[in-house]
Length: 322
Ligand code: GA4
Image (tube, helix red, strand yellow):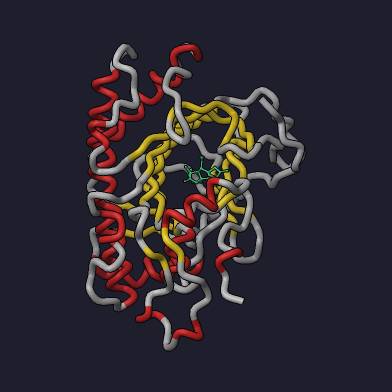
């Protein structure tokens, strides 16, 4: 695997500024909006997703990644399937192996795991159970955001990601301990697990084991580490939600640094709209057409452009209004 020479910051110390949102309290709607505006990122607690289901899925994921490479690579295809080191098709690499799959509502029928893999039925059921609950939680959070912004109807955002034809993705990442890390005097490291990027979809929901590594980019350009918390979910605003809110919400740049000692396992649900969905700034969030910062596009157009880009590219720039 390649070692990237780019020097990166060390871990942060002190209290984390990352907003923590209790979604069992409807009053959190304003804090949610503020978090999307200031960070494009927040941590959700009191979410009601069963920790048992999460543990079963994590266990199945760990089992899968511990299989011999010859078995893992049988889960093939693009963009879905098993991948190791290579991210996307345009030359990006990281210290990571992963399993990418379609998470649309009909994905129970998606035969992405070869039947002969040990436990494939348990794995499939855990995936289905987890994505169903996380999709529901995502819709609840989007409806609270909707309320916080004072938009009608309540399901303006959630309906984009809850229909039959939505294009959602689920990703399991495994970052093995990395022996190549040179710990520098600041305690930082120089190996990238997953390079800096924004997510093209509407919103992404991440949960990881107890190993840190995720960092987000703040408005002033600095990177801060996100302390791991296996019992919470981390949400980040995607490019499409930035456009829908006419730039009021920020699609946050994030990355993952490799760890020299511990494995990191993360599971991410990327909530996307249907391929034909038109994406443009909501008229209720702008006073007149002239204020629109973006050209309209369909999710299919944006997705194609994204999959032809490099990870760190500014994918929204070509859609900005001149
Ligand atoms: C980032 C968000 C999701 O992980 C992902 C990624 C996709 C991939 O891994 O194949 C991309 C990346 C992501 C954006 C730019 C392109 C496509 C890798 C890459 C270089 C699954 C997605 O939808 O877009």
